[in-house]
Length: 70
Image 1 (cartoon, rainbow, N blue to C red):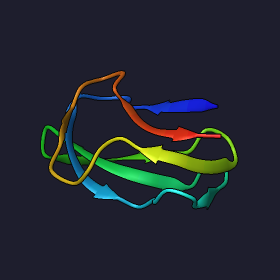
Image 2: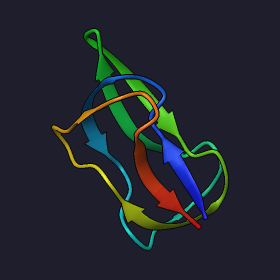
Image 3: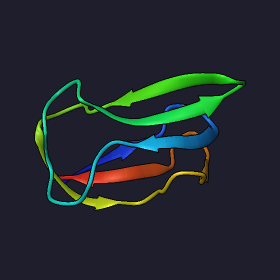
């Protein structure tokens, strides 16, 4: 199991993944707004999403877990 962590502090604008979804390396899973810029968060490894820990509108900090991928 691997945790996908947030690379930057900001607000979740988009969640482009759901539990049970198969993902591959470089899939765009989240969009985080920081300093009025949209920052995509990409998947590091292929796998299946076991848990999504954030929703649109959530404030996140650098290092927060966004999703668990197995």
